[in-house]
Image 1 (spheres, rainbow, N blue to C red):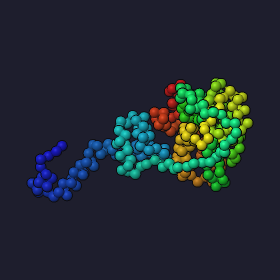
Image 2: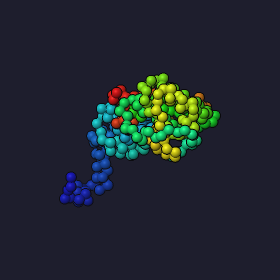
Image 3: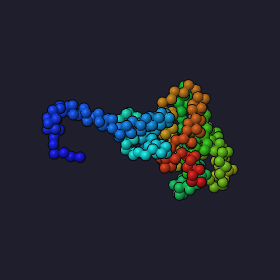
Image 4: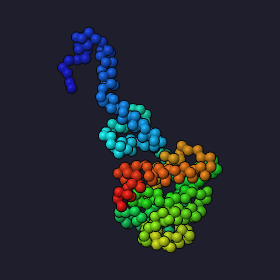
Length: 278
């Protein structure tokens, strides 16, 4: 609301200093209803941020608040978080080289089919690595592209094809998909090995593979690895491979699949998204 009187004129008329007026006005703002609401909201933001181990930025914090029935705008949440130094763990760029090109790769069928409309229509898979004081731990994971749920994974100290075979076997045991499932991966020697291709054939799974040098043909898995690295791996100091495996189990099975809100799923968890949409 504008006024035709200046602050200086009003201060002189009421015989108070301008600094005194501004101090009074600041106290009114800080103790008003809006300020009290912000303090309550900030307390809930801190609880959620701590509960998710600093993994959530303002979009997921805002979505979590809405799920709790708290009505507030995203900009308000973002502003409170910025003013109070509350931020998500920062992602770091990484380009892992876990595979070498293999022979007999399949065509990229993923680029030719529509997006999945139900679980167990398209699975995507990839390999990454985790540093431990014992040495590298290699991790293969299988994701259901419909729900972004990790349906199978395996970790080992070796990059042999058994790594990806065990991840796929775990997924098959837990899901039991119908014949015709599309499985997409890169063209690494693990995924083009005779053992892995025979496993696909025996289960009536159709292989699909990214073009050489095009990691973003498998963008969902690349995004997932980036999330896992920033939310679990980068700040960790694993003494052993077994310690890293336990941390991966807790993150993948208990947190990522069941608790973490996913932006591509309208801020639902993968398990929740499958339940609601299947």
